[in-house]
Image (cartoon, rainbow, N blue to C red; front, side, top):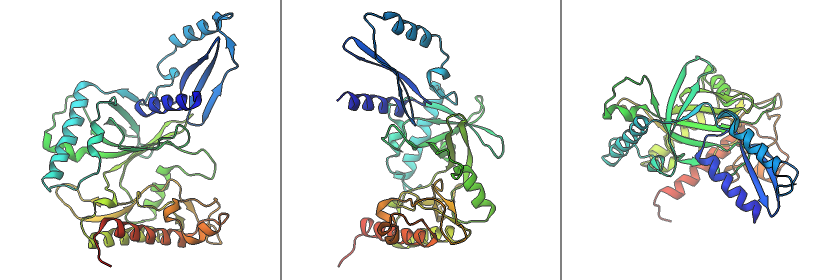
Length: 350
């Protein structure tokens, strides 16, 4: 029960605060332990009797009180948003929801969650590692994310890009600044590429129908906290007709066939819909979330063990757990995505 409670409290804390790590004190009877928690695990001290040895606890609290904000675990790239910034985000999302209700824009499911008052708003700094540009975004509640305390802990935000403090912006112009901000903790291995580098590789090889990356970089190199900013894309659940679905699936197929790289995790969550901006509502598909992708070796397979979302994995991968992903597994996964969406989102007789 204690571990379940601790996990619940820590998950709530990490989901509402932008942290690299946190400290906790676990007290049970006359004994206590210090804990340091981050996305890779928990470091636990030896138990000590704080009744007979009160100095240990007092010394810890004194030292913690004198730590800087970042040394207490808060992300220095995320600062609490000012009231004016919170209002800008609210205006932008409210205006976008109005546009969707009036049929002028595509609906983004659960977008209203982004304004939940249960979550504090933050101003996020992203330094694009290819242009060197410093970008600022306002976020509040993630509209999608992992409930796990450990691992990649990916969170997706509807974010508003902000510029100079003195800049005046009309309400009608705000929705055009809304973007998707992906916040995750990437795996640190020599064989694992950063997501931003993968997108740059795809772009340099002229792979079509991939997300438009507006900025990306590691938030903290020591903890490899990675953020990627993209133009807004929409889930397949928002397709308006069968023709549009087929077009999106066709585009996703094209993005997998232009270079010797396999996606390895095609699902209904990363085959997405993109629309032109500035009044252009031309629809095309994009294949998103390339962070698990790998380059094919000479025998047309990857050097990594199999990966994927179980519902959409190829039959070969499911029947052969030790088999590695290849190009044809991506193609079969796209087929399963097409069938899944067609059955779940369209009325049919039969």
